[in-house]
Length: 487
Image (cartoon, rainbow, N blue to C red):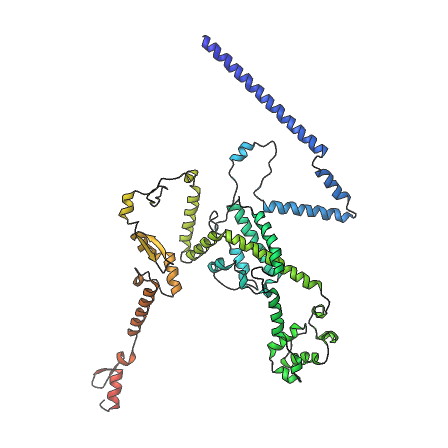
């Protein structure tokens, strides 16, 4: 009885303590809200004052809307770059927010960050003036090698937009896969180094930016002092005349005779005194000796493009392993059917969903045994039974190693070996099983082709003829007997 009465008193005291704690928490919360409202009213951070001053200082009504839409554009751009970010207020439960998993989205091609999805950039590249037709797998391995594109094709707005799209995607991909990577610090360091390299002409891919322009002018230059008539200029041909006219800003159309006559006018008339009708549209300003703003803007464009290329190469160095995996995956898909690709994608999704934090725990595996389906090392007797300690190398697969006889025999039908045989121009048939050397595969293919040549149809020996007596001869014997008059 006494114990029950005492337990009731303890319960009442505990309930009273909880009510007091809840009331204290409510009072503290309301005080924080009032304090926050007072800070907004007093405008301690100066945001309200700055907003009002921006509107009051505008002399014209249109400037108010111009500043408003500029501000709106900045806000939308910020949300576009950080679309997964959310607003956190003081009333939110911070402990619950820390428990939430971050919302990171990947496309189906990216496979949760294992591969890059460059299909849009690939289509943009092959449909541009500076691009060329190639397979997607080849593009993945060469899209960062911008030095292969000539400077005349680089100095365009289209190429700059293409580079910006690549840089934007790689940056977005890195922020999702490596959120702790300080990209702003990397870009700041690159920009500081770039200014000095550009001034000294040491930017990779742009070292000969001045000599290239001079070489183009020299190639298209025609010295009129060596020509005394239009007929002598006609001998140069239409292409040479077209280059010479274009270098001087003159019209380059018409027949060979018209081009030669137009160029021969400069023999006795200076370029500045030539009639305007001979100049190409929009090229009059480039003929004058006064430096134009167009040249400066073109140099600025080249400088911006060179900086974007430098940033893109740096990101490609960070994502080197991902690029290699993406290229291998693209080559692998060339040998798979649609059903096999869908099955593999579903398997990757199931595997990603089943991952847990237990993977981070260190597993004791001193013999370095392969992992089983449950993520643990397989038994040692099973390891010896399947001969998984035996290594088989295949030169056709790029000296790739296969462990165990079963994996070695199976690889002859897999995508890596099929791709290697296709590169050698040899069909992957049963005749080439157990052959891993490139030289042996080529020698066997030559023997097969020679045997196929012996089995070809030979009409002189196999075509049959019959004489009047019913005797059967091949064509060669029949014609010999006929020439001798025996038949």
